Length: 161
Image (cartoon, rainbow, N blue to C red; front, top):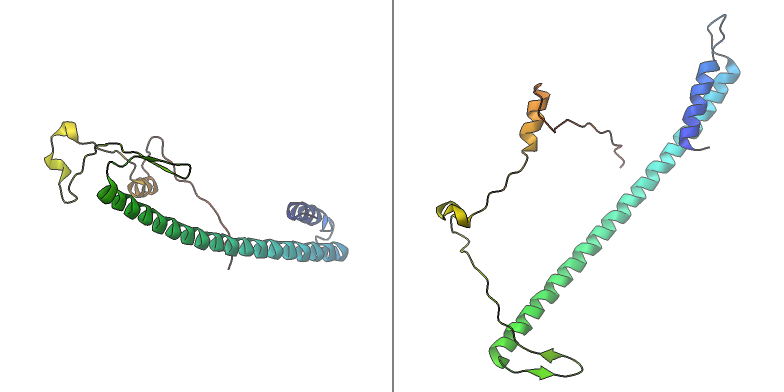
């Protein structure tokens, strides 16, 4: 039986477990309920173990992805070093070969000093970004305020260790 089927069977057993005249639980029904609860607990434990193994696998993938990102960043730095070296020592050399080709393009970009204050620039050269302050919205909703397009969503999640 699947977990949801066990829950349905448990409910059916509980609905019919009591003697309508005495109000006492039927011993056979009590045994069936105990067996169903045992099976439910076993299935829930198996599912929790499966979730735990998936979490371990997910963490291994995350570690591997982090290692891959570190290798990619190292490779990107090597590429930039090699391009800078070629620019300093071979600018203007055009080469075309079956293995690689070299040609030169000119680009322009704007660099703004990191310590520059954007509020000191004229308005036409700045942008502002509007974003939701979810912490303030949550506090306001909990305090009883109604905010358009916002609602407090509660979730229940199992904690598996």
